Length: 457
Image 1 (cartoon, one colour):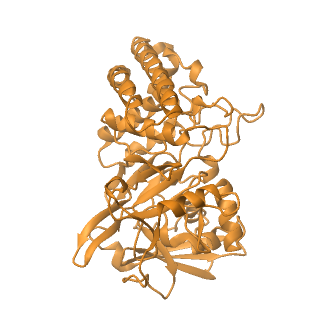
Image 2 (image 1 turned 180 degrees about the vertical axis):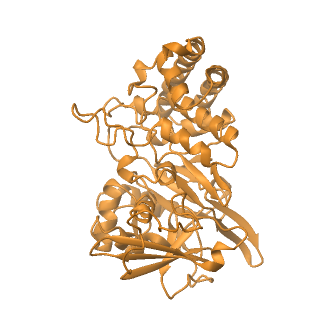
Image 3 (image 1 turned 30 degrees about the vertical axis):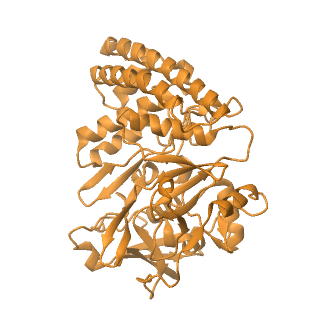
């Protein structure tokens, strides 16, 4: 086996979890060979955890598989225009993953900071945190074409995966209670993610859309991250980071970083495999389905600490995507906390009713059974989905009926909430009507799926 430690690294970064040294990440650029060596003290620490399942604390005798370290790093980085902006600002090629993580690694998703080997992240703030006022944020949102939101004071301030504009900030208390927001530099970590309304006209009211879906999930008792709307007066979604926790230290509040990995990292797959049809839906490649599917996602249950609870959480997540019409629920939109004992599902995020936007392709990121269209999902497809994911169909029917009832009750209440203004209310009402219609259909189809004979599947 070719291993990730086959070549001596020419460059290295040290990974830190708060003030603990975790590992050394090496890279030999000419052959693009990556290496990883955990710190011996970290391996024996009582609360230590690995970077991912493919990179366990107990290093395999043959070494880590070639590419596993690279895939872990790749999945931490932004995509699309955000990556273009960061690469141009840092003067690093988009294909230079090591250069990008070297530039952005001080504040990535999860527990770790990537820091120059030989140095340690500062333990004391060198200067007062940089406050972002409402007026300044509004100006920056207005001028995004001229100055990307990711860049502040000449420095890149966004390192989260995904394609949407985001800004990571620290809030000293909730904005509704007069809280202030700050840009972060080590050792301070961000507590919230700001997601403004996109500038494209094809996705109107996207902030309201995501806020509605996230809030609906929480109303239904589902484990979604907390989200609110901040107005500058331009609407901005404010999402609480569940990979961060504010704790009281001796010298005041501190932010603890918690380690999470998305499903691509958990399955040791590259970013390009976040969709089940990893080559797209063209005539000659549509049957290639090597990316993250529901079957792959549910297969990760075997690596979780509480398998029954994890399977139920994934089932509810899959059914909720159907309820809201989220055709873009892909492999990077579900994450797990990483513990030494195994994985644990993290709160849900990026819940959006994509089907509200006719200009966007509505092909499903993951097929239910063999269909990639929401309208083609019937009782047989749900039964096939359950079989592939090793979910009993009576459980499928029971959960579908329960979620349908909750959605029918709470969707209209969320649409009538005081969070929305003017024409946003009409959009929320239309979204509520769609969810209620989906709920009625889901309960019916799941009930029929439970009655299909096994020999027909």
